[in-house]
Length: 335
Image (cartoon, rainbow, N blue to C red):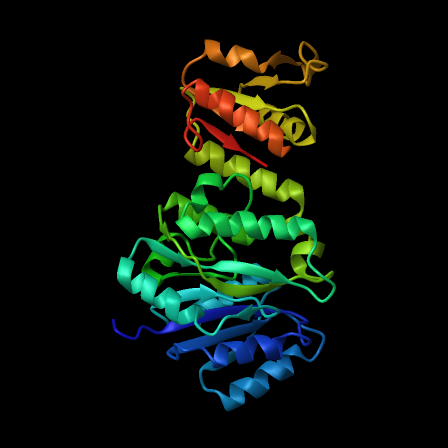
């Protein structure tokens, strides 16, 4: 497989302002054996016409209409028309660097199946990138640099949705885009994790991620905080928790209460702890809030940490390590 065909899947909707820049960045890739499978998700602007123009001039670009509605339907339709040995995704409002495909293909050829090629990302925006996205960029790139993305998978989506590449055989084994579950990129990241696709470290920026006020991740209900939390808990219970272990929730803030409420609704017993003296001994949802110091009395713990403050997280990490508990094995940060 010296020159495998790469299928670039692009769902798009109302991105006429950015689509040309996206397509032209693909056309100048240093790796040229690719196909673009672009699916219009019921655009009401000129996006579809622009795509058709490029498809007419470049046989590697193929245009389709979404037979359904929404990004998952669009991705499913794109994949059903893909012929590549390698599969990757792209967002129609973003820009890939000229060497992205070449670096990812070479990484996969070197490491073989059961691996996922990922790249570092850089946000950009017309009016500047907000601090939240800059922190996410820095955090995500620090994981990608050493291929440790899964180590913090319960914090946020650790695989940049438009900047990964896998063997088609592995993608099929992971379920491809079959699940109708939002947020679809995070769900896919969890399935990569479940299937144990190893992340190939990358120190190079391969993707420029555009931020703007009406981007789907900012406006769609599918990307609301509760959707992310439901997904985290579902996969945590499936992949990293056993009934033989003592489950602990650390934190009594908004997210801690949400996690506790969801566990109660699932009939899962847990110990609820915090380090806030004002809350210790009080009852929330008929559960007593206990001091975190009770943890030293138990063995075989699985701890969900819902505390977001950086300094508090450092303290929690240090305390649990002193109890010989290990991150991503015995305890997991959910924020």
